[in-house]
Image (cartoon, rainbow, N blue to C red):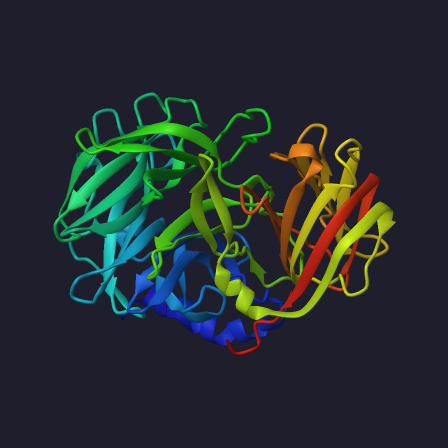
Length: 497
């Protein structure tokens, strides 16, 4: 590693990262300093799991994209490594955009990313041109391939645009490498393209795996494609999504498509389409297959529309979700925090068969670093309560509200009073399945985040909150009588597991 731009980023990290440690969440990945967005290169390498990310260390706003780098053995405790990539070549001078990683048969680590080149046209406007590039390294230092870019505009299908051609997700299957990459098609909406290679350097176009056809947003971003529980799953993050009931919210969204992969045509025959996460802060998910066979997903826990809204004194901006185990049940993608999180549970507090009628607080049920499960049911089937609420991160001024209405089958999360001094969207309603008023919640909190899992992972919803860390009260309330079982654990990542 001899590049000046990368050395400058590493020197900056070494000098300034220690000053931000005290304000970090305990088990959610951040850039440590500066700006973070999409997860990149989330993959196993030499017995550990590496995660790279879109990164600009010099400011808490988006800038020319570098790749930050961390690794873990258990998805909860992360070791920070030096920045891996910086924009320093003509083909990536506008940024090293999102991509992925794979371990090569000879033990080297192959990174595949989008290089961006910005050119000012005759009309004075800047246009971006995107190509796919690779770098190879040893888990710390990476050298960009002298033959970059490895996939350029000449390898696009007819009508494809190199101005929106990005985010390669690479994997190895048998003796070949494969990659899915998003591209704007001739109808001005997103396509997912499939490429293959024998060596990771020389690529050829295979097929259009899936097409948006202007149905789910416009341009797609950050594709991931993998088999799971007898089906194939395609994850994409659309831009300019139109609202579709409570399933898809407008703006930047995420979509899960499941179906059969036709190996003759190399197309996904999609059968089921639904949102991945129903919260306000979830984008660009990426998955890996763990050594024990589990499919693990992580995502950027932020929203482009609200990414300028932050606490003024924070030295970092952006964090990842807790990694989640994926499965398919009842024709849907289910997700729950990785089971390793349970190793760090301490100080169990449990209540069974508690009558909730009006508002209720319980001794020992509080905190901001917690893993809490709440199951509720009516006192009797013939008398359904009107609503149930959980208030978290609460003090005399602040709180975040989780409300369930059994009559309409929705959960609402409201962070209006969660410390955001900005006029932004703070409420999201989530469609849920709950028969006769019976429902289960799991709430995971880590300083500035709240992740909600409903009915054992049938729905998930992610939210950033900036409530003062001292606000740790929790209470429950209902209109009507119900019975609740509640168990809460503190999460302590300082203990050795």
